Image 1 (cartoon, rainbow, N blue to C red):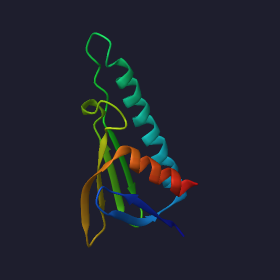
Image 2: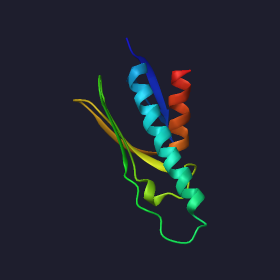
Image 3: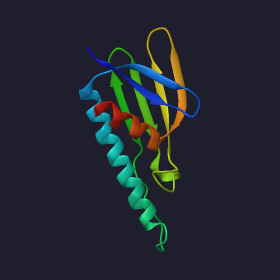
Image 4: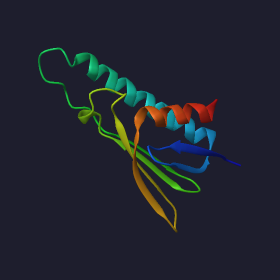
Length: 112
C-alpha cells in the first residue's frame, strides 16, 4: 500500500497515494534539476551566453497520473524556480504551479 504524499502549494496542498519507489525517482529528477539551476546561477556573472538546458518532465502513472514540469532556462536559481504540477485521474484534473524548493522539501520529508 502506498503512503500518501502531500505537496504543499502557495495556497493549499495536494495529497495522493504515492509509492516510495516513485518518490525516489522524483527525488532524483528534482536533484538533477536543482543542480542544473545551481550551475546556471554560478555562471550568471560570467560573460557569454548560457547554453540552453533541457526541461525536466517527470511523469508517474499509478493510482493517479502525476506530471511535474520545469523549464530551467527561465529561472535564475533553484530558490526562485517554480514547477507546473498536473495531477489527474478519470474523474478530476488539477493543474497548478508550486515552488521547486517546497516540492523538493515535501518529497524529502515523505522519504524520511
